[in-house]
Image 1 (cartoon, rainbow, N blue to C red):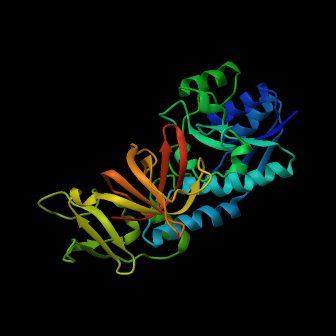
Image 2: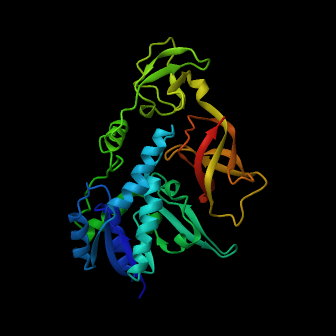
Image 3: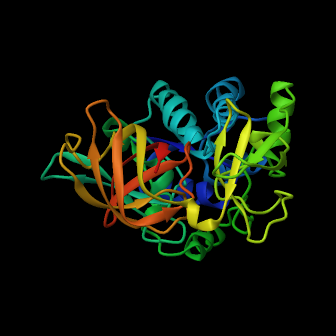
Length: 347
């Protein structure tokens, strides 16, 4: 019997995954990671007890601080806008927890992500695909998965068309998390005050500086570069005849550039640290794809080509709004994830 380690979070999704994997014939164990100190292990433990499977509580808080929180802080400090959920998935669930699964003799790991994995017989490659539930699709935050990881992961929720089906399955089996609500905030910044968290974490004060227009004219004073993101309009404290938006940031000059919304649009971006999933080799000629530059952004038509230095250039058919360095860009061919990387520049 194949063995599976279930990545538990204490929520209904991972609870349903544990139930589905057990009922499909896997020898299961549940594992929940202590990451930032705010977790409650009790619900996950109760679910595993009700299913009759072992439960492991794993303290990976040190690794989480190093691989997720420190990178999150550094990204803001260099003027980028990070997505820590991607780094958590990359380093914790599909890095450290995968290794732990192997140590426990498990053949695979199963998570509550809404996505699908299939093997392409023609090309001999594992493919990452969107979930059938488009509203919950999480393929965007999984673009980094490599062939070895895709071969050893299971996403049972990817074939459900709505969340209520998942809740119903959990409720029918009497799982204690069936009606539990969802968490929307970044787990280690529950109040959404990123700047305050960064200051407390580093012990630093981030000084204010100049708001400037596109010509370098001073418009006012900002409260620290880390407090602003590309496309931001609210909270600037600047009076102007037209609404102003953050269009760029300069850490070296401690300056934030503001302009009208029309100046937020870019026709091209460059991405680094690219991971190609559906292709055996990076494309040296432009390929047609649809592109998502933020988690919940609409897909946009574009072409993509790999550069000799390892970066990827993406050119949009129509200019896209508020492209932010530090965010992920993910390429799709229909429901298939072609690949993705980290945005480093746009124009």
